Image (cartoon, rainbow, N blue to C red; front, side, top):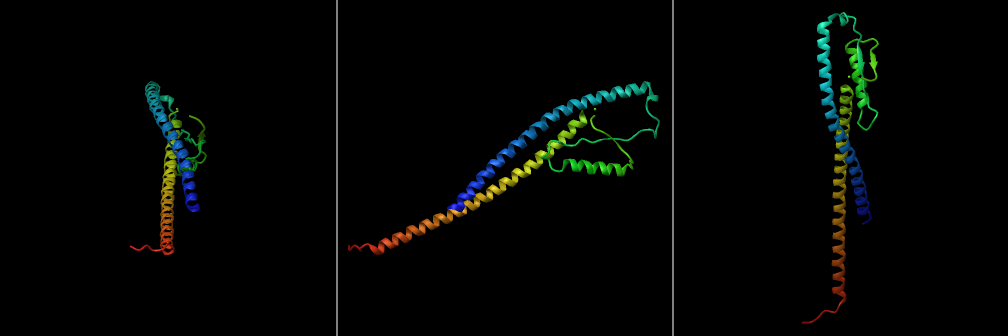
Length: 182
């Protein structure tokens, strides 16, 4: 019985961990929905700024730099929240690829930026966190189901052993007790 109890205790612990991870997943999902609303608002602001810029450039076309004078700028928003897999490493690989693709010798990096990009980055981070946590919760569910199966098999063995003991005891009692004559 000790082995079965150990399995049940382990399954209970996995259930508690699953509950915590599921709560974290729910929080990340909730934050993603909230960020989705912010992104929609930011996109409207960006559209308004683009319209104003187009109007301005329509009246003052010389305000644009001449071709070849533009300096490439990269905006890279990483994650400080963690627990979303290799989000930062993926960003760095994409930056390195971008630098190679466009042959940028010394790209200029902007630490902060128009808010839409930041919200999109946060949204990507949260979606990765949700996917990561979904996988972790699924793994815990699978492990828990496996432990339940093992526990049930052990319990079934215990029941069979108990039945064998009862049958042996009954047979032993039949041999020891005087036989009745009818």
